[in-house]
Length: 161
Image (cartoon, rainbow, N blue to C red):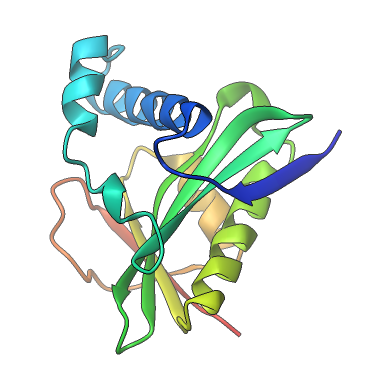
C-alpha cells in the first residue's frame, strides 16, 4: 500500500472532486448535517483556489494505490517575511490512518521551501480534532491568532528547516 504526492492543477477532475469532498465534510461538520450540492457549489465559488498555482501557491493531490485520496493547498501569504499558509488539508475518510496526512504535510512543506518560505502556518476550527492532532504530531505548534477568519479558532505554525 503506497501513497504518491504530486502537484496538480486545482481545476483537474481529481482535484475538483477532492475540493468538493473537503468542503462537503467541513461544512457538514459545522452545520451538523450533510451539505447539499448547491451549498458546496456556493462555498467553492470565489474561494481563492485560483491562487493555488505558482508563484502564489501550489495544490497537491495525494493518491493511495493510484486513487485520488487526499489534497492540500499552499498559499504564499507574505513572500517578504517568508510565510506560507496551509489550506484545504483533506484525506478522504476511507484513507485516514494510512499515513497520508503526514505525507501531505511533508509535500506542502517541500513546496513552501521551494518558494523560499521559512514558516508555514494555518488556522483551523475547534471541531476538526483529527486535523489539530495531525498538525501537533508533525511539529506544528499553537500560536497566537494571526487572522480573524470567520471559522478560525486555533492557529498553528511551524518553522521550516
